[in-house]
Image 1 (cartoon, rainbow, N blue to C red):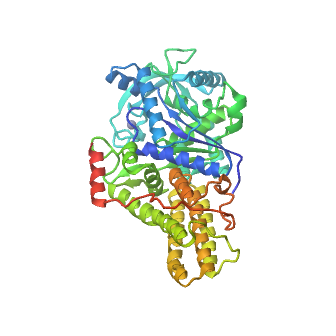
Image 2: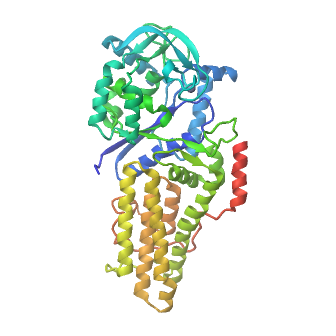
Image 3: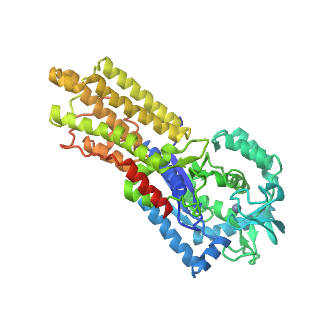
Length: 526
Ligand SMILES: [Zn+2]
């Protein structure tokens, strides 16, 4: 693995046309977890999120609520920030596309593209989907409806500016070919090539005259910049591109990881790199496309009464169980399915039975047999200990390898395999029998290994379950920051003079499955 000195990760900027559901939370938790992982590796990390605040739909939403668009987006941005605070998202910057620092640079970029001949004036006619703010050609429609959201489309025509995408198609294909890490997972690349690039890339309409709520084109102010040229450039304007190029932008661009949902993959994998090429800027190292969080009966929708909001789950079950569930349940190549049953099952089995019990048993045994003082490592593990050590190191490698390939659910599974193995180690070594037989040395070694494995497990889960990790570390008496990073993760000889807390505190308590499933079902109907 290449060790990078810096790590810049972005979420999409979210379109605040309603309350954010659990899918939006998933994307943001994933980005945050990526950042925290790289922080534990000692890298200089920067995370960007924000809101995409222009467009016809915002204008309409604001009107519905008797607000100006600005009042409407101000409120929505506040709500988003509040949600990310609840989810403990450790972002460094929150960009809003209605901010001056963004708008002015978008205007500059537009003019530059005009001067370069990348943007030209024309007339657009096409099938328009209002919610998606996208035009589609006849062939792109699915059963006469919007291919992205499945809603009704209408035929519309307007004077508009276009970005000459065709000009860059070959260059983009070549880039894909030469940079195998640019798109993850790999199959998304083939989708782009086969569905969009090979059939002939359409030029992209980059302005509108049919609404006002957008960034005005300086030289032709009846036009406002249309969504993608406005939205995508946030990833660089937030760093000061075009206004303060010598600081954050110089330090962090190109992005190391940009995370997007599959519904906006096309815009990020085709238009975004082309805009960057036209600006003569380096492209992000990796764009990761994830699937959706769906429900048993398909996509989440208010009309189906199957929408789940992240705050409601966090309030009842705590933040880390929600973060754990979402990352653990999202496969790389399929949609995740949220169900109340699976949520409670993961809570009871993975978090309570496996993790919480391992901690409780260990803390109570160290208190019982050694008055809370963790015995010293004797440096010569016996066969049983050695087997555990080797298994643990192997699991750490597997976790790391999968995490870095963005197989997040699988990588987390490797940690839980380690947790199970550590629980099994207790059954194998039978500390209670060792105590009875006064096998002091063996018993010492068992306690030391259990505490070490809990430390390792806490570090491994820290990127996505930070509070739980800190809680475990506190209970086993590890407060020294030098022992909480990836550098000290593998060795077994790091702990000295460690004392566990006197009485262990359960981190997850078993839930009554039936009652809680009912509770969550009611939340979804609300
Ligand atoms: Zn649509």
